[in-house]
Image (cartoon, rainbow, N blue to C red; front, side, top):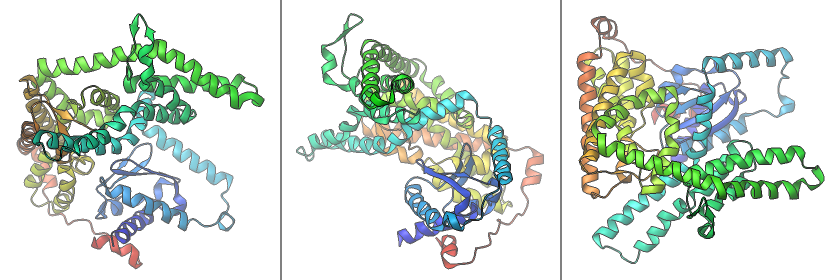
Length: 494
């Protein structure tokens, strides 16, 4: 039954994005189905947003349909299967003329320019692409680590504790290898060579090596060292492919790539990356212990604008480095307060516009996802289009961030053992020296502060009189005409 529901959702989405022949590529992240389109004009945005399973749409380098965690992992395979089934054999298709290809290329080029993809943002997106595939493992191992901590503290099932510790820690002990593999893959090298070079960092034998007058330590440099090592390996491999004769390429290129990159990693990158990683950890600890409330206010208040600019992706390696060093990232619970501000702002909009039934329907459908940390539907469907409520939502995020930051300053630090989840979904991943109960209470207090501050700021300052006059009209929710066919009607009933 669940499979039928997911397939029906996929079928409805496929129909509204122009059909199988309009899809050039398919991928998904934690919450979004990402598709590349041949012809953007064939997409029916309004009908797509109205589907019960769709939480929102986002246009970036790809067309992104927000389905939420869990759902996207189930709908994407069905969507891929339907696209494959629906594509006609190449011999049966109508030939595409050169003029049509030129027009399509010109349209795609214009779309690309309109997105204003700067080199910095594109680079940050590529860095994010390295770490995003690792998030499911981080989440799973983080929750297992939390469960293991509860068993350890309560003394329950002592025989199981070592097994859970091994399961939770195994991935983190080798995360550098996965980062190296993904880095080489992302930047056009041979993935396994990137992983091989990064594996040097976690090899126990490096403890016998001296560099810069110091003994190296296994894991020194962590994910930053692995990223740099694999990036170097990609460039060494490219040089080898260019100059090594084809007859000996299969032997010489992998050898030189691993040897040269490995030596540079051992006698340079591990030490330098280790210093950078140590500096990041020290800076984050100092920032939250010395100016926790103010730092939380700034981080919580500015996180949504960073997301809108695409600059939040620079934080992913920092989060991963902190998790690798201390077992958790203290920054994520603070940044999660931005989502709490969005929820509070949306509730205020709901109360201030009692006659706008269309917008209130959107808010009611998006709020459950907002509470669970999926903020795109509220951002793109409510606060950002309205303008001022987006700013007041940031005020709520700042207040919640200041609340959580204050307790870090008072000596009650805690963080998240994984990245990705937010909102209520972050509760199972909280960890810190103060104990689970204290961590849960502080985080819940931060969420409540963010909700209340976002609500109050939006209710009293989120609207001008003109906005209230224009928006508080009796508007019916947009009706969606169901396509013909039983499979296409089914999503509307889910």
